[in-house]
Length: 397
Image (cartoon, rainbow, N blue to C red; front, side, top):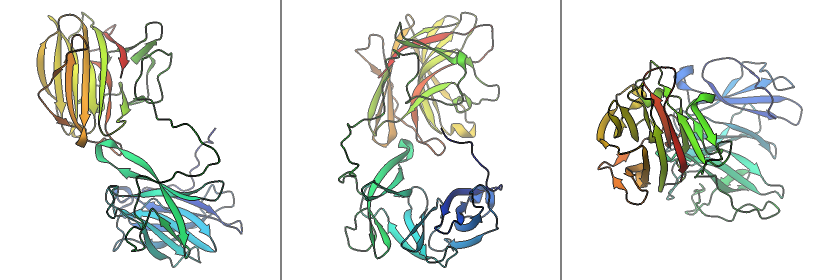
């Protein structure tokens, strides 16, 4: 198990720390600064730590200023190889930046600078913010992410080799000394062959525990849901939205998973049992980010209605725009969302699971904060009373 986190130095905007244990027993720490909290950014500092590495013992020294050539310098990783101290650091911004490497014979500098990977002519934008890793047989690789907007931060593994004590990451296709990321490459030799596995994307709800693909929007509460393997269903109870909530952005009981790929279709079958004492309970299927949309069943005095809602700039407290579609005959319905390139989403519904009617609106979902968009399920109500309605979801595919 992981040990409890240790605060090695308090302060605002001190970000992305990385320690280095030197051969002589000395311990150092490098980190960056978040402009939003520190009031300055694009700087890297090196500081001494005590021998056990749980406290800094000096103010430290700024070893590199990226303001002119490498704005938004952050995320440093600290290494030592062949007598050189190396700091691997991303610069240029999350979506458009490059991978920088600094080296020096002295831990406090001065450091030489070299761009070792950028997008070049590849499809992989902003290939940076990662770490050098070794395999047991001595291969070098670089693990990093790519910001794909609504699709989140996608992890890549790049080949890496050393040339004149500088790392070359990716493949230098044009001979300019700067690597470009690759989408296909021979995978690392790790001593044996393992079966290809991908995270689960569907759920039949046949177990007592939700799969690891699912994420609640906030720390879960027991009364939000009930898994019933004997019936193969997930029951979501309508929970009262917080008094301060302007829209779903502030609602905790939303059960979602990350977008699994660029183009996909998600379908679910639900049966809604509304609380007859309440109005405006909603259960449904959503694609969710800073802007979101959903298809839901909504309870009213005279029955259940299908509604389609959109909320743009939800994080800024904007209101939803709701369109009432029709009164539902019964309480069972199939919901579907088709996600295409560019995170363009089309919702549809069906009474029989075979013939689907598409909502005449193409909604482009946006990422969340520091994450991609998600797709998932929810059950909410506006009022608190002595019981809730609930929706039984047979499956999510």
